[in-house]
Amino acid sequence: MKYLHITLAILAIFINTSLCQTEGISVPAAASAAGASTYSCDPQVCKLANGCLCASKNPPNGLSQADTPQFVTVTFDDSIQPQLYKTAKRMLNVTNPNGCPGRGTWYVSMQYTDFSLVQQWYSSGNEIADHTFTHVGTPSDKEIVSCREMLNTYGGVPNGKIQGFRAPFLNYTKETLHQLSKLGFLYDSSASALQDDAYWPYTLDYGMANDCWTGICGSAQSKIPGLWEIPMYAVLDNTSAPQLMDVYIAGQPKDVEDWSLNTFNKHYTGGRQPFGIYVHPTHLTGYPGLPDPAPKLDGLVSLIKKLSEMPDVWFVTNQQLLQWMKNPVKASELGKQDYMRCEQPVIAKEICNGLDDDNNQNVDEGLMNSCNFGTTTFNTCFNCPSTAPTLDMPTPVTAAQNGSAGFRYPIPINCDTKWWDPIGNACLCTTNECQYKDTAVPVNRTSNGNGVVSSGPGTSSDATTQTVHLNSLFIISVCIIALFF
Ligand SMILES: [Zn+2]
Image 1 (cartoon, helix red, strand yellow):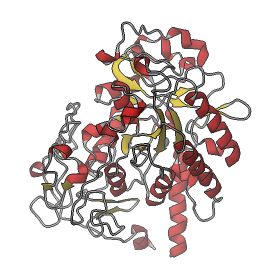
Image 2: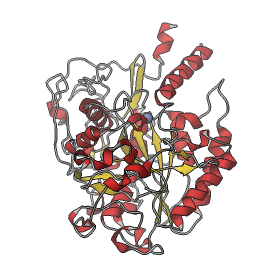
Image 3: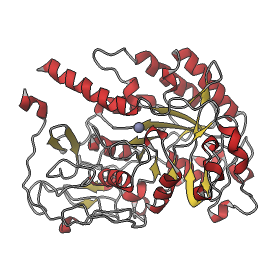
Image 4: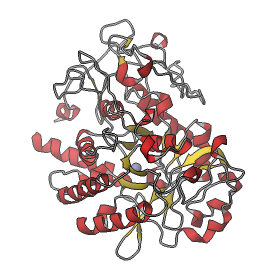
C-alpha cells in the first residue's frame, strides 16, 4: 500500500511536471533587438503621475542609481503542494534591510493545489497570482477567471489582492493582455527580457517593449493603458545563451551561480533593474526514484543568501515592486512604506487564517476541512464544495449548509484573510492599522451553474445567499486511493 501511494504520488508529480516541462526554460537566441525600434513612448507625455510609465533601463522618476533599491523577485509557478511549499519557504529564508522576511510570488494553477497552503502563503505576506485553471497557454477568459475564483473561495485570498497573471508556458498573446485588462488585473509577467531590453516594469499605454521578435511591439492592439508588464529577466549562460526559467537545469550549481551573479551585477551596477529567480518547485523537490535535486536547491539557496547580503537588496513580491514603481521612494525610505511592513496579527487562539496563531509550530491545526474527490483532494479553511471543481464550475455549491454545524463563512470584502475567522464568522481586526476594504472593481460576473453568482474582484460571495443541495461528506485524512486498493 505504502509503495502504491508513493508510485501514484510520483505519477501525479510527473503529470504535473510534464505540464510545465516545456515552459520557457530558455529564450529564443534570436530574440529582442530586431523589432525593438517599433516601440515608441515619449516620457514627456507618458508620466507616472498619470499612471503611465515608458519602458526604460533607468530607474523611474530620474532616481539616481545610489538611491534606487535593488529589487529581487523570486517567483514560483504551478500547483502548491506540501513538499513544494517547503522548497519555496527554504529558498525565501532571507531578511530584507528593514528586518522583515523576504517575500515571493506564486503563480498558481489549480490541479493538485492544496488551498490551505495558498492561504498560508498569502497570510504570511507573500503574493498569490493567477496561472489558469488547467495550465494552458493562450487561455480563455474562463481559464483565468475560474482560477481566481478558486483562489478566493478556497484559499481565502481577497479578490482585490489577486492582481497578477503569468501565462502557462509563457504563452501569451495580445488577446491575453486585453483579457487581463478587461478582467481587472493589474499586471502580466509573461514577457522575457534580455540584456538589450532589460527594462524596468512599465505600463502598456504604448504597447509591449519586450518579445519584439514576435512582432508584438509594433501592434496597436498591444497598447493597453494602465496594464503593467513586469518582464522576466534572463541570465546568460557560458555560451551567452539566455536562460529564463529554471536556470539551474542548464548547468552545475556553481555555473548557475556565476551566470546569475554576472547578470545580477549588470543590473546592480547599471540601471538597478529588478533581478528575478523563476522556478518550478517540482524540479527542486526530491521524490523517491528520481535524481536528488538537493545540490541544485542548495545552490539556489546559497545564491539567494549571497544576494541578500549586499546593500540595498530587497526580496519583494511583484505587487510590492509595482507599489514602489507607482510611487518610487529612495532606498533609504523603502523600509517604512506600508506595503513593506510585516507586523502580523496577535490572536490568542488558533483560528483558521493561515497563520500559527498559538505559536505551537502548527498552522490551523485541527481546523482545516479536507475535501476529497478522488484525483482532486485539498485542504481548506473554507467550505468544501459538494463536487470536484471543474473549469465550468470552479466553485460548486458548498458541502456544508449555511446555519448547519461545520459551515465556514467566506471572506467578506471588509476583512483581510489573516484577521478573518471563517468558523466564528468574525473579523478580529479592531484597529485602523489592519482595516481592509476590497476595492477591486466587479467585472465579468459569471454564474457558477447553481444559481449563485460567483464573485468577481471586489465582490464577495455572501454566505447567506449560498444555496446548498448536499450535506457534508468529509473523508478526513484518508487518501481516496486507499479506497480503491
Ligand atoms: Zn506553469
